[in-house]
Image (tube, rainbow, N blue to C red; front, side, top):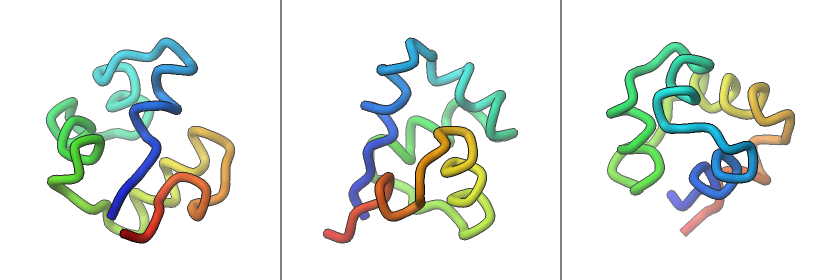
Length: 63
């Protein structure tokens, strides 16, 4: 699953560690999400959408 996490994070000048803190996950998890090595659970996807104040569908894109 493709996503726009890296772009959204960069627009806010957040480091991976800062985003991880906001989401309650590790920096390694954020890195794995951004590089497509890990697809988030549904609860994590909802937390990401809340943090970025965007619908899930605008963050996560089908392949």
